[in-house]
Length: 175
Length: 128
Image (cartoon, rainbow over all chains, first blue to last red):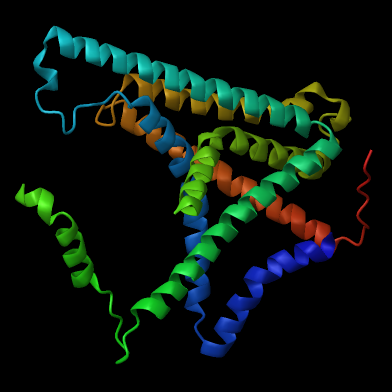
C-alpha cells in the first residue's frame, strides 16, 4: 500500500523535477502550485454552486423567446408548467443527493466499507481522467496523421469540408 | 462518438451527485483531523476526548454546516436571480467557504498520506 502511494505521488513529482532540472525553469513549479490551488479552491463552486443555480433556474426562458412574456393565458400556463418542471427537478436532485449522502456516511462509519467506498471513488476518478487523456492522445494522433501537410504546416482542410457540407445541402437550399 | 457521449454522460452523472461525494470527502477528512490532531491537542482540556460527546460531535457539526450551506444555495437560487442585491454577497461567501473547505480537505488528506508514508508502522488493515 505504501509503495502504491509513493508511486502515485511520484507520477506527479518526477516529471516536474525532471522538467525543472533539464530546462532550469523554477517558475513553472510556482505556476503549477498556484494553478492547483486555484483549481482546488474553485472546484466546489463549479461543481456545486453553478450546477445548483442552473438547475434552479431551469424555468428561466427570458432569453431567446421573444413574445413569450406578453401576458396571455397560454404563456402563463407555459410558465406554470416550467415552474412545476423546475420544482420536480430540484426536489429529485436534493432527494437523490440526500439518499446517496446518507448511504455513503453510513458505509463510512465502519472501516472496511469505508475502504471499499474510497477505492471505488478513486477508481471512478482515475477512469474518468484516463478516458480524457486517452481520447486526447487519440485525437492528437488522428490530427497528426490526417491533417499534417508535407511542408510542415497543418492542413485542416476546413474549406474542403465546408464545400462538402454546402454541396450536401445544395438541393434543399435551392428548393 | 458513442464513447464521447458515454464519457460526457458519466461526467454529468458524477456532477449530479457532486454534493453527496463532497460531503463524504469532507466527513472522512474531518474524521482524520479529529482523530489525529484534535485528540492530541485537546487531550487534557476535555478529559478523555474519545468519550466526550462534544468532541465526537465535531465531524457531524462540520457535516451539518456543509448541508446548511448547500441548502442555502438551493433556497437562494430558487427565489433570487444572480442580479439580486442579496444574492451576490451570500453566494460569494458560500463559494469562498466551499473553497476553503476543499483546500482544508486536501491539506488534511495530503498530510495524512505523508504521515502514513513517513511512519514506520506497517499497514494494519484487515478485512473483517
